[in-house]
Structure formats: structure tokens, C-alpha cells
Image (cartoon, rainbow, N blue to C red; front, side):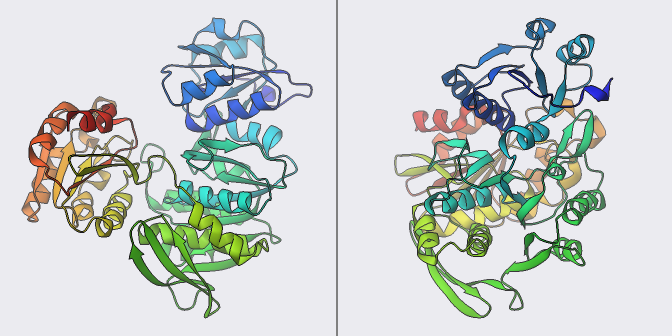
Length: 473
């Protein structure tokens, strides 16, 4: 294809987005519309909440990819990273000689231009950390922009167009587009950056942990000497990667040698109360509705960024206390028959383990029932087959669904939910295998009792199990 057309021309008025319903692409579409562009889009599956967002903005979205969607001749086509070079609209775009770009290119040109970029990167915690930083900046009156991979409850949105000088971007290590296989975060020049963790994930694009480290190393090596990186101190991969980089590095975590440290923590539901220590001196005690040590560490990195921007401690404290969280991150979906149903995005073994650990202390009087649907490109592969059994140690009852899209994975690479259940039972856990969602709902109606907490973990819709279960209860 003619990569000379991979540019953004001047005087753009009409923009079409291929695969518009992805979280990032949908946010970009809404932001472009708010900026006054004529925006259209297409996708294979159009469903809430993104379809509702787009509809409210008056953006025309076509279901399915067809040549006709480009017949009006947009000035620019933004190509989503899930779109292949064989897509009918890509072929039509080439035949018409239309200019095209990736999502990060469009963000840089139209949204982040002339703003200081705060990039949150890492295998875990990106969405939560980005959201906390955005809310602190907002409460400080800095009128930030942001584009994040989850819905912030404080804004009921995953994006914001502010007039201030900062933009917060969730830095994704996933590839950019079929014509650019580099990671998305390589497109951004950070003013401030966070590196939360580096683990193997995205087995569909990364070969192994060395491949993952290589991509993060390129990102970190590109951060200017005038910029600042906040790096988690409890990850050996992070330690190795930040060594020798040109930017200023400040460590945060629990290590006594780090500049920023998480001190004593207490739980007083619904509050987590944490002392924050800077340079061995108490920086303050903060209350938040975030739960779990991993989330307090995310908050710690956000506090460090805020302090580096000269935001006063009292404003940081108020922001943390009023931060309402993110949808699908330990989100309580409802209570029925004294049973609590919680929705969470966890799918990587580390995220599953830390989410269970986080929820457990807040519901000490009942059982924690963990319901897990492996549906990511990594979790449906057997790369984590022997690691997942260790992730459910603190759950009292465990329900594992068969991966719903297993046919996408080569037979010899497939994850086995049955083997996971066997391994869990051999470890003395009470685990059960289910071929579909309906059978899980039937089981939970019979087996759960008042005081129980049902923690449902999946990165997808899970057949709307949350509402179905609450209705059945």
C-alpha cells in the first residue's frame, strides 16, 4: 500500500474511523466531534455503552465494513488496530487514494498538540492510575484533557477535552495498526510518565517476556532528559528497564530506599486509609474508596505526579477522598438477598490474584465466590495454565467458565478450564467447571447464601451475567 498517504493533511473537515466502537477509538471519535469535525464510523458489532456515546454525539455509525461507508470521500481515515489490510474499507481507502492514520497519530495531531503529555504505562494499573491523576488535575483547577481505557465515574466518560495544559493518556503497549506494528505508547513524548509493572501479556503479539521488555525499553529510552518517570520498585523487570535512562527516575512503592513509599494502611469500610512517606518523612495520610494494596500503590504514583506538578497536599487529599472509581474495576453492581455482586476487569493471573486479595478484607463476614471467564488472547492460551491455580488462593468458592471464543486459538495452544478446576481442587479449593454462563447463574442461585460476595472477573461482557444473576437472585 502507499504509505505516503499515512499523513494527516491540512484543512481536514471530514473524518471516518474504521472500527469506531473500541474504547479508545470511540473516545477519539467523540473528541473529534466536540472539536467540530464531521465524523462517521463503522464496526462489526455496535453495542452499548459505546454505541450510546456515539449516538448522543450525533455520529453516524454503520454496522459492518463495506466500501459504501467511504463513498462520500472523507478527508482522513483513522484505522483501528484490530483492522487488517484485507478489510473492505481499507481496500477502498487505498483505491480512492485517501489519507489515513492510526489512532495515536490522530490523538497527537488533534487532541494532544501543544499539551504536556502524562503517560501511564505498565502491564497492570494503567486505567486506575490514569483516572486518579486526571481527577487530581481536575480538582486542582488545571482543566485537563484525558483519554483512558475505562469509564471514570466522576465524569461518566473515558475522555475529556479540557482547555488546560495537560493531557493524561493511558499508554498502551499493544500494537498501533496493521501498517505500524510498534506499540501505541511509542507515539507519545511524555512530560511525566509512570511505569507500574512489566509482565508477559498479549500473547497474540508478544513472543515472550523478553519481547515485552524490549518494547518497554524503547518507550523508556525515548523519554526526554527533561522529563520525569515514576517507576514501581517492586518489579524486577521495571528495575532492569529504568537503569541508565536519560530521564529523571523517581521510585515509588514499599522499598525503604525509594523516594515515595506506602506506609501504614488500615481498612475502615468503605475506606482505605494510607500513610504516604516522601524521603522518609510523612507526606500525609489519605482516605480513598479504592481497595487493595495494588490500588494504593497506583494512588501513590498519582500522588507523586501531583506533587511534581506543585499541587498542594490538601487538594490531592480531597481528590483521593472524592474519587469514585472506574466502571468495571471492583464495581458493586448490586445487592440481593444480602448477597453482593461485584464486576471486575481482571484477566491476567496477577490481576485476578490481587483483585481477590483486595476484595476479601472488605467483606469479612461471608464467603468470597470468584467467577472467572478467560476470554483475552492470552488467557485463552495455555501460557498461564500452570500459573492461574495460584491466583485463587483466597477465594472460598470458585467458578470457571469455558473460554467463549476458544475456536480462535490453535488446538495445541488452547487453555483448559477443566484442567484449571482439577488443579484448584487438588490444591484443596472448592472449584467448579461450567460450559456456559447459564449454568453458572443456576449454580450460584442454589449455592450462595446471605453475606456472600460474588466477584465476577472478565474483560468482556460475560453474557450480561451480572444483571442476569441479580435478577435471578
